[in-house]
Length: 575
Image 1 (cartoon, helix red, strand yellow):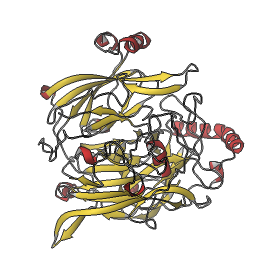
Image 2 (tube, rainbow, N blue to C red; image 1 turned 135 degrees about the vertical axis):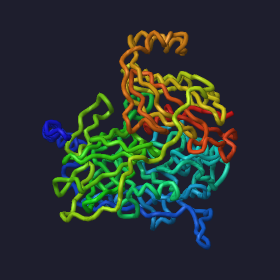
Image 3 (tube, helix red, strand yellow; image 1 turned 180 degrees about the vertical axis):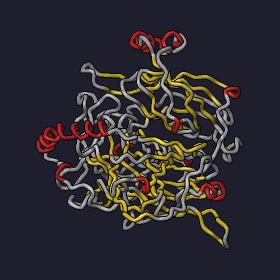
Image 4 (cartoon, one colour; image 1 turned 90 degrees about the vertical axis):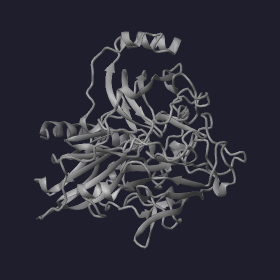
């Protein structure tokens, strides 16, 4: 049950920080989020675009054209319109987040992503980090990655496959104007976002994000989970700060200005946005609703809970259904993670429920939440009880468990963070290698591998693997961490540094709702996280319906959008 003591502590922290927050925002001459009234804007339901046609009653493949536009967006009733970059079929219909693309299993969706952005960015960016820079120095490079998608390399949104407006300039791995999404994978939740080299962080802050739902009616229909526009809602949650003129605020001074004049390792805003509105409200009936919650923040973790004690019934994680539902009082989401949950409002003893957050930032050892970033949105619950036709079955969709006997390779993946003389982060490498280094991970299609991910940094890093799905097998704390870390910085070899001598601390249980197949997982600092990565479809264990060995290959990376690309993707070549 929900702890009243925890709620009291939560509000005491908020009150204690109230004065401090007000002072700091006043000094910076920004919008003080405490002066914006919460829960005044209705939660938008983002426009939907079908990724398929229906001809004579049968679904057929469809070609879409989706553009990126500069426009103004109203994030709050009392904020001036904000300049943003937005996805949409036209400038008029473009939204932040972009339209939800609804695709069907087995039916191809083709998207021509068009760049209509201006010659200059609306946010500051740092040229001292590896960045897509057009030869003419004009235009905003963009490229779209369908996060969680299993498709050909040329449609994966490689960071160097960027292009400017009208395809006037293109990155070195650009191949096609039209992306082909086969949609042959398991049904589930995906999202699309910008992935351009060095600009991912500012392009996402500007608004280039959107949901993509892959449905399989024959498999999902019998579950009788809440569905339809009213009862099945994607929620894209992220944080922003604003200037008094409505523009998005991003600190233009780096934490190491003599090295990186603008770049900072994390972005945190104190205004929480859901589906494009700050702290929105939603009227709900006393019955079950399904929420596909996507953490679209650059660096902020959310630990969601309801202030009235309502529970989350987890039915899927990231892009994959669970075998059976899992009930929790809270759920922790790292940037880019997805929690697919059912909430039963008939269980509420109150007529409203606030979805709140108490995750420190940076997570796990940063500042406590304050009055503004500790609240997310409000549900207003109708008084009348009614018959609920939706259900949550005891069994959902069971996929094969990880097969250790099929493991072809065992790898050690070490995360290093490098700092300046002032002990401020400058960059982060995996296995001590920059993005440009040749591929070191060369898995074979159709096989499984064990990856031991060693987090030698101070932060929890959400690791995202393109193409492959994985399950978390084990989380073990390092003992004598500094000794081991010293060896690793010298040798860069876990075996030579006798990792078995150090990976013998306490074990941390994987949460039940995260024991299925995932494409992102939180790598705890000072721990070795063992994962089994599968490079095939998990619903059929069949070969991919495309050639995964083609160029430019795939990447895996930390999904802190500030750190990638001083940092970002590490090349993985499928063989």
